[in-house]
Every structure is written in structure tokens, then in C-alpha cells.
Image (spheres, rainbow, N blue to C red):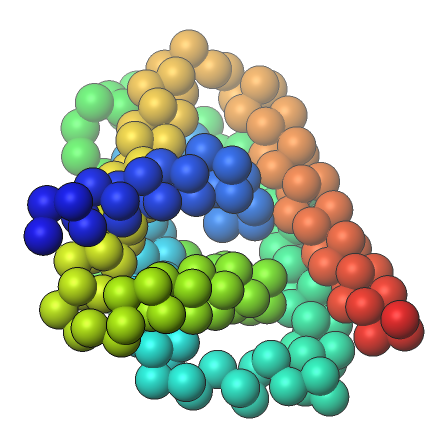
Length: 215
């Protein structure tokens, strides 16, 4: 059991280090800097819930709808367009000064706002078809290796998902920690950088899915 959990942790660290700098990362850090640590944690929770759902669906074999060649093209284009819109909104967002507000105090989220952050994290991850492809490859490979043993698969992917979630929280905390050293002008530049990053991912996604469809 412990060996499987540790192997899952290694995969989670690999995913967070080498594949953890996509659209969700830009959104996570931007939220932490612009909105605060706890909203970013809620965003990370949404990403975690989406990863969990993807693993479950992959194990159930329900991802064929998304990965069907005829659907993959339009799904990829639509996802790219959404990312571009997110990027443009982020790029043009104006920084609102917090005045004398203490950044050390927890961010209070009232009404339905908390759910908005969770939904955004979930949505930012689910619209990326490459995330689906990644999880399909991992789940198929690990399932074959473990002979489809449900208990062993639970240990392995439990270690993976919890590690990715913890790494996202650390990224959010790191971004929030440096916020006190940033003025409105620097945060504005950061928003523009995040916006360019999200827009770039959207354009890249559209070009790649069209290219794959053509070849």
C-alpha cells in the first residue's frame, strides 16, 4: 500500500513540476495575487475535483465521447476560444487598490462567491482536452500494470491527486506571500502577463487540434 501511495506521489510531483504550468496555473497564481490566498485555495479545490472526476471517468471508460476524433476537433477549438476570452478579460482587468486593508487577514467570501472560484477552477481544467488525453494515458497504463485492482488503483491515484492539490496550494501561497512586495503597477503587469499566457495557450490549443485533425 505505502509503495503504491509513494509511486502516486512521484507521479503527482512530476505532473505538478513539468505539466503544472498550463492555463490553470496562470489562473491560480493570478487569483492568489489579485483576490487573495483563500479564493486561490478554492480555485485549487475546483482543479482537484476536476482531476478526480477525470480519473473516475477514465476508469469507467466514459471519456470516449471527448476523445472521439470527430468531437475532439470542435471540443479543442471551443476550449481554445474560451481560454482566449479568459486571457483577454485578465489582460484588460484594472487593478483596484486595497488601500489600508491588511493582506494578512483571511479573505472573507460571502454568498455564492465561494462557489464561483471552485467552478472556475473546475472549468479551467475541464476545457483543456490535453488534460483528458494525459489522464487517459496514465489511467490506462497504471490500470494495465495493476491488473485493474480497484484498491491498488485507489491508493495510487489518491497519492497522485492529493500531491497535485497540495502543490497547487503551495503555488497559491507563494504568490500570495509576494503580494505584499508588489504595488498596483507591478500587479497590473502581472495581470497582463497572465492574460497573454492564457491567450497564448488558447491560440496554441486551436492550432494544435486543427493540425492534428489535418494530419
